[in-house]
Image 1: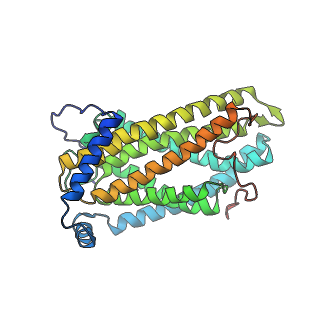
Image 2: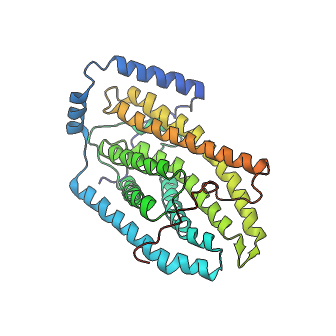
Image 3: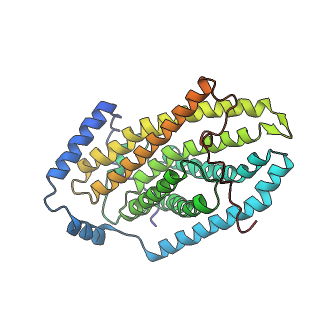
Length: 337
């Protein structure tokens, strides 16, 4: 991997567009690309795959080994740390069964989001403040900086683990099928964006999505700790309420406001301005639009949840994903336990 280096020239950051400008420009760019693609089809896709995809077998093997490592680490942490913690804190049985999943995800997402925040806000990478710069100096097969490659290894291996964990380790919920599809789409995006050197876009996507997972799992843990030892904890109840409000606001702001204006605008419109013949333009944008549709789907859950709270149908704040959990299928024990 190459050392981190960003060559953006002296271009001033492009102002973030409005929603209307984003839709108008992105639609016009996509339509022009479709009209100008006289050789689109499976033949072009195969040539693009052969010429532009760069994903070595050692990298795939390292990702698979890290995925196994995540699974083993989660099993060990659940058996030796999370379940003893729940027992020591005398949580309710239902909450004690769900604590390991949330604690594990909180630790991972907090670490990865903090690392991506450092890359975007604490280094010379300008991608957050100037999203079109993700395609400046783009070249087929360009070297991936080691710090970005590290983020990709962590995320790719974790989502490989998450596909297994959703089926065999996590609590099964009403939206678990959608969550499983989300993991598959995300893993496909991670692998293909790395192979085709869309890695600068990937860092933005990680940053804009992981912050909500941090808030979600933190809020869930405080919900579980509200009834420690049979007594109600006002502090955890207050933190859970504030966390829920923060989660709802940030979900809209990061995934439904910033994500289209920063990521989709850059991939749909700015990419063709910087690299007119950029490979797999429609493939990547289709995956990103599917991800957007999933974000909207889950936002509807959030709105329904907020409506239940505001109308008094729900007296106590419950898990923002679990108020409609399929109770018949509890969390599955790990083999290591």
